[in-house]
Amino acid sequence: MSWRLPQIAPAVVAAGFLSALAASATGQTPASGAAVPMRPYGTLAGCSEEPARFHACALDKARTYNPPRTPDGQPDFRGHWNRARVTSDNIEEHLEVVGDPGGKSLIVDPPDGRIPYQTWALAKRADNARHYIAPQAMCLQPGSPRGAYAPGGYQIMQTRASVIFLHDFSHSYRVIYTDGRPHIPGGIRLAMGDSRGRWEGNTLVVDATNYNAKTWLDNEGNFFSDRVHIVERWTLIAPDALHYSATIGDPRVYTRPWTLAFGIRRNADPAYELWESACHEGNRGELPGSSVGLKPYPGLTLPD
Image 1 (cartoon, rainbow, N blue to C red):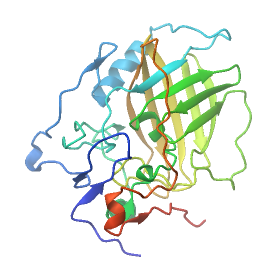
Image 2: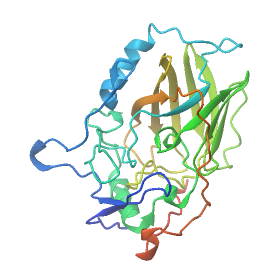
Image 3: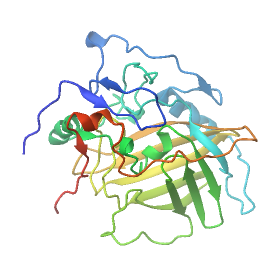
Image 4: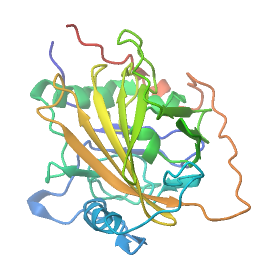
């Protein structure tokens, strides 16, 4: 099978979150090592919000921070949260465009900030962006890790046996069981995958499998297959700041596992309420991509 590289990759942004639709070249950066135009980064918990710098700073802070506890004695993540710097979801370094401040890559390993695709998969990423509507623009479930950094906030709740995420986007939710139960059978594939958590000190470590691979990692066509294995780490580094990282392994798509990381900020407004951003799953209304022949993304299931 051959894949044709696109001239321009349309970045279709989910309705209700951003007011603009920006078309950008996939992986676009200026030539000759020139700086990529983007808005300056702020700070979170005394760390730069720039992903690689935040990652290093947050790991250092986590060594000494003693977080508040739930009645069960676990770190208390309860509350409303949102990614510290929200873009239109190109996880690699990209230019500032209308509705997106631009940004450095979320990828901290490899150090070059690029997803280590196999050759065929790199071509398929370009083909995705050229021929398919971004799944989140159709109000499909974001999956993980994207649910942690997509536009829109979420509420975290905790019980003795689980950590629960309620997203304001498209009725999405996620339950991470922490009671030691096994994963569901491998033949069951879900949009949000199947998550099992455990506490390692002050860090919630989440092992996620069983994805149906019908979502993307961003709006630029970055993808994984149904055999992906994701390990997430959630750590409080200050009262209102979480450090998040996810290591993504899929030997059929990537040349090696890779890691993204960023900061998550608490919404400290005591009057804040989580209101749904109602969205019909499979929506194709008011999508410019629908009018130019783009199709719903069918996912990627690779044969054994």
